[in-house]
Amino acid sequence: DGGITQSPKYLFRKEGQNVTLSCEQNLNHDAMYWYRQDPGQGLRLIYYSQIVNDFQKGDIAEGYSVSREKKESFPLTVTSAQKNPTAFYLCATQSGGQANEQFFGPGTRLTVL
Amino acid sequence: DAKTTQPNSMESNEEEPVHLPCNHSTISGTDYIHWYRQLPSQGPEYVIHGLTSNVNNRMASLAIAEDRKSSTLILHRATLRDAAVYYCILRDVAGTGGFKTIFGAGTRLFVKA
Image (tube, rainbow over all chains, first blue to last red; front, side, top):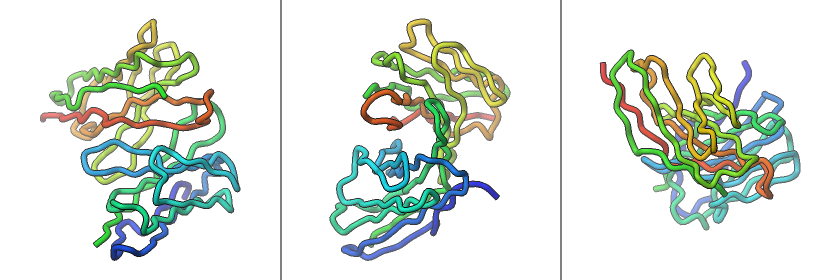
């Protein structure tokens, strides 16, 4: 079954703790993205990666870190430096080419208590 | 980065056509126009995209103004399942941002039975 897996769907953490969100894809896509969505708002780009071992900051990268050691995986770590981490986090992929569509995972809803 | 402007919300009756507008007056020559939609608590899904010419697919039609400063997503017969937030975005594939994508707040479509 091809697609993008994000786990877990719901995640709770205490304030001050780092947490890593998983994103795995078997679509063989080169580019991967992480977005954050707050209630009633659009998506904001955190980080993106066009190729293995390379990634770029998006518009709101502060307090987040990523790695891209494998084509299939693009984990996002929400660090204690992120002031308002409670949000809906979406991972996406895109195959090669200029205008190709993005495919989104089901998302992880992170709540920091 | 070029931005898009969409109405916050629109309402439609079931089985009637819906025209969702999007303004992108600062669009560059290499920006593709993409539309996505997002159901509650899910990741966005691709609807359609275009560059200069009007486009049709099984989900919708995309009408692009001759000057490319605006576009309209057309749902030919709205159903209750079409109730979602619709995002009009520009894909900057020629600038330093590479495959960077910016999502706005989108248009929330309400469909009445």
